Image 1 (cartoon, helix red, strand yellow):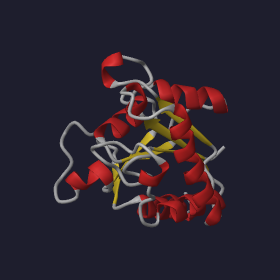
Image 2 (image 1 turned 30 degrees about the vertical axis):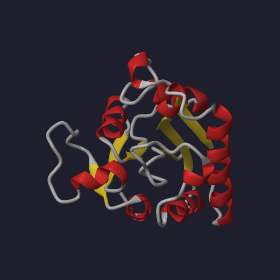
Image 3 (image 1 turned 180 degrees about the horizontal axis):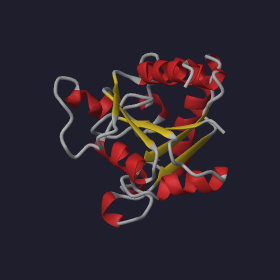
Image 4 (image 1 turned 90 degrees about the vertical axis):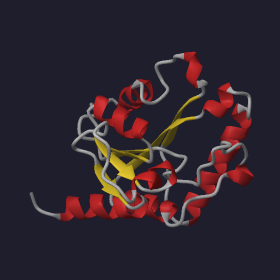
Length: 186
C-alpha cells in the first residue's frame, strides 16, 4: 500500500495562532488540494495526523471539527482528490497524552488501522514536531515551508531536525518530489 501522512494546519490549510475554530476559518493553502488529488491519482492513499488542541481548550467541539473536515472533503472532491482518514489528538498540551505530536500515538493508530509498518512511509508537516514524530515512527520526514515552516525558508534547519529531513516549498513541491521519485527507475 502506498501511504502518505500529512499534517493539517499549515500544511494543507492556512494556520492561525488563534487556532482554526470553524469551517469558515478553514481555508486551503494554494495548490494543496490539487497536490493531494495528484498524489491520489498516482496511487497514494492520503491520511491526516493532526494535533487539535482547540478541542481540549474548549475553543470548538467535535461537531465543529467534523464540519471543518466535511468542508475539506467536499473541496477535495471538487478537484478529484480525497483524504482516506483523519486522525487527530483532541488533548491540550498539558494533558500529557501519548497521541499529541511529537508523541507517536497518532502514527501508531494509523499503522494499526492500515495493518502496516510505517517504516519509510512519507510524512509531511510544517513543524519540528511533525518531523520529529515522523522520524521517531520510522517514517520518512518531510518539512514544508508553509505555515510555521515558513520560519525556515531563509536559513538552514537547526540541528534538532533529523538529518534525513527533506524540505519542500509547499505541498505541491512535495507531491512533485514523491511522484517524480516513484517514476525514476531504481
